[in-house]
Length: 357
Image 1 (cartoon, rainbow, N blue to C red):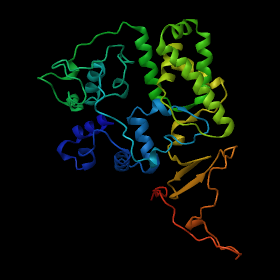
Image 2 (image 1 turned 90 degrees about the vertical axis):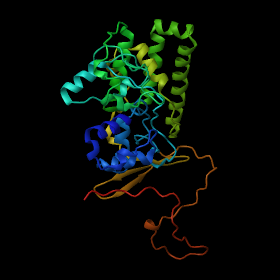
Image 3 (image 1 turned 30 degrees about the horizontal axis):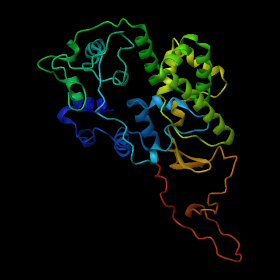
Image 4 (image 1 turned 135 degrees about the horizontal axis):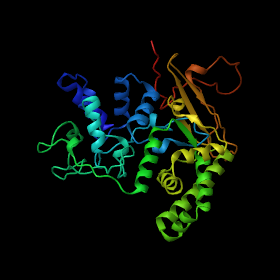
């Protein structure tokens, strides 16, 4: 996302009048992303999720989706504390990509897949440059700002960096799988993903041996089996489980499959629905106690559809079940003995919904 902002400022130069780009923070919050999305014409929950999916590494989390979750980013839309990026994480670039971009576009940009733990460019099979070839600084806080992509360092442009071919097939495969996850167009069922990986690990003698030899790999197998149990139990009770990091899932895919396409084929065979990514961009979690409630924003009419598609099958008796009366939904009721229901404003009401003109 930082690259997108810096690139926009570079292209527009001093003619840019959008203060949003000039004042965009290094560690943006939900409110910052919403402001940027609205400037681009993407309003509401849809805008937040489109930015998250296309300009951050959030797809590493969102692609593996619980079947009972009909939102892209859960309750991120009504959350206030989350920061989505940090310039403290080092970035990297592929010299071949940069040179081709400049020839084709006149400028280059930082790619998401090059700004994580990967060492190789998935497209060109060359080693990523993680430090400035001119001054040896990292591309992160305390080193170079990302603006160096459009400038020079000691008279040298990044496109002139030396190219080193990769000789490690595993690193190339890892880079390709990461890239395919970022660009994947559908959500994969979390249960199907875990079940397929759990079976694959026990079928793969090489990886199973690694599990017993290395504690880190052993934790992968344990985490997959544990999380699969949690997901299956939650599904049987219609109780959406808490989110967890997906690092162990991605690592297991890289270790046990030769390509992401092969993995997706096995997941589809499990039978759970494969949902388009964009189909969930307008929906967020609005409440989650015994059952999970969702709001889907409709921008044509400027209204939200509140739903609870998977009511919990067990009631623990610890919640206050008295009804809440919303001002827009109260009707005249016959008089009866005792207190009469009175309309009350709802605390922490969902955000208003944009209506397209």
